[in-house]
Image (tube, rainbow over all chains, first blue to last red; front, side):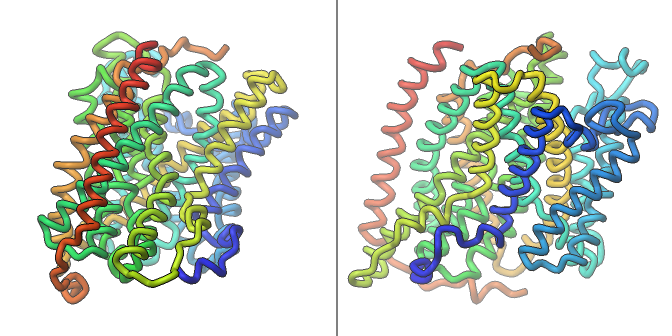
Length: 491
Length: 48
């Protein structure tokens, strides 16, 4: 941590994925707000994927009638390619490789989205009449699983050379962070409709996270040290990875306790694989057994799943599954997005506190285990560890709330400009995340020499300590909260 | 890739400060769970 003394607070602003998620997400939100002020179609071009029976109805521009479906798709590809490639260029990636790999990921994602949105596959029974069909699988959210499955096939069965190449454009953490910044605008819009409910979700989320942090980490550390015999540097990184926020927590803790760099690297492959398993398992199980506690279920995902991408993805699936099930079994139609938001809210707070936690660990390690006289941990380390995309999330939420609550812009105007960003764009980046998670998840990693013990320890801690505690904590802080009932239109 | 060398560790004895770290953290966790849980249930969840 010695080199942090020479670092400036603004270091990394144009060289990290985290910061570029902030810039790109904020760029599109601001574009939406300018569109809201001017009514220019600055965001209406974004491609929106819809339920379909006729293939020609499967996608089109977010602003109806603005252009043809292919125009919207091609323009979306060009603009999203342009802005992400620009970021890649500034970050000094190989831009040519990035664009080629990204293009493949984009095409796969579009195909998965179109297939999954087919009415026979995904439309709930209540919408069959709308599509003129009399039967269907009712697999809401199937498009996410199709994208994940297509990614997994590539990530596990394609030639190694191709897998290594396509990973240059498959960036799940980057894509989901951009989507989460846009999700902040959604929370802002939702807060305009249900201010109290949004505030309650934020407060419950932060309280659940504080309790979760303080219980998860020491229990994981204890089991790993005493039960599995790991050294302090291994157990500290491992405990942060399995109990806080996955790869980024393992890396932050590794830096804080000066662990060998190989440790977070070895852990990261296990973390990513388990996150994918949780993403597939948890939403259907929670829908089956916890339909009466939708927001507790959502919040538990944020506490239990350790990568941003897999958590947001699982939240999106849970949202689809629970809303379909509630409509069918309880005859109630919940507003879309609240369950996803509850999953992301707890995860965002967890991400925010990692800087503080890494700082605390660094202080303890320097003071007690390394015992280097006179050495202090600079407080700016908290800022360096702070996830910057979270700033974008709150920026997007607060600016939309400010403009709406002060009547500078009407809800209708804000919806015109911002809805394509928090809707069509966000969903597309969610889908890109699913495809990318599949591509980077290599189940073969678990077979490698030496990773067996890590995988076993991780599995035991995540399934028998973290998940049950996450369910309990989520229930204590969210029980009885239900998503607002959909009224069919905005005010 | 063989990771055995990286994963193999010498056994480190449990340090008293580790006991402190774990005990204080769990203690604070339980206290925050109870205190924040009561506050949230009384002032917030009761409205739902």
